[in-house]
Length: 372
Image (cartoon, rainbow, N blue to C red; front, top):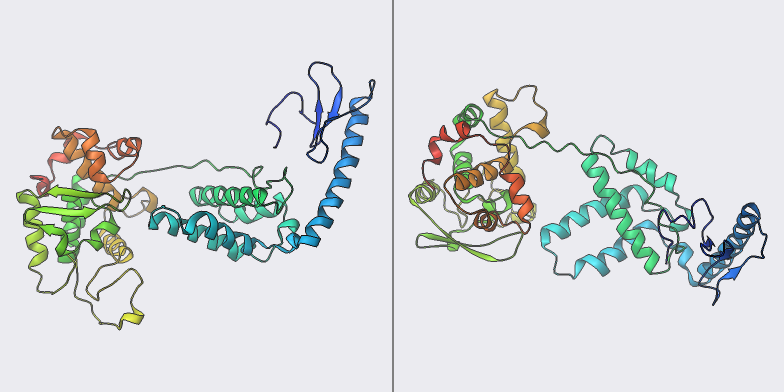
């Protein structure tokens, strides 16, 4: 076990060297020995540190020999990432979206650090890798968190010395999270220049509070009478959503596009491609992908002229449409726990974040939100 961070009995001392708080004696404690080794009475702090450093150096040499005999000195970061994913992520109950986020982060780590042997890596190497992402604090911190996880896994497998998780000293960057919100003017202007297909998507998001992946995956066979029966992406729970007059009108608009599709949201593709060339996210040539939906909204925002000079991370997007729908429900008296279920959040605090940043005068101007 590693020593407790910030302990007064270990402050400034080498690994495995402790100062007994009762007797004041220095002791060297390592799992190799059945009992702690107490240094003689009168041993000074300097002498104790020198002795501990010599012992640690000898143990390191012994461990290096054992690792070489067992082949553990040849384990690369790429091999560790693959093993970690196979053992800790792949066959778990985690949602597919969560697994995908792990794969993306691990792929970046493998791309930059993959050939390195674990025993050759240093904290400086990790810090240099993370420094590339200093302009994206959230991504920097996400990669750091994943590195800590895979190196902790390496510790449990005995691939690296017990005291060494070389990622921990790397700094966590402060994150500025800006959630852009729609105003009546920016929403109307964006909606006005949107294609009919995009308008259907925006309307559907407002009435259902679905995220992009749920919007593009909604099929006609998930509609039953005046209700939507949808398995939520984040919770994996099937949800029954009653459709009022407003939502039924949106569904009717989606139905009358003149395009035959198994998906509620769909578009007529300019060039129908063979299935082998289609995006992995798409199962039908008329289906939107989340990326296409995001690009379409960004294009409409750009054409509206409302966001010139506004940083991308400060502009409202699909999440802000979800947040707007949630806030409208709250103003109608719907309990926050019910809104949480509609949004598919497992954490109530996340729902509270979605409900922040709106003002009453912003909501009343949305003609499209007259009904839910």
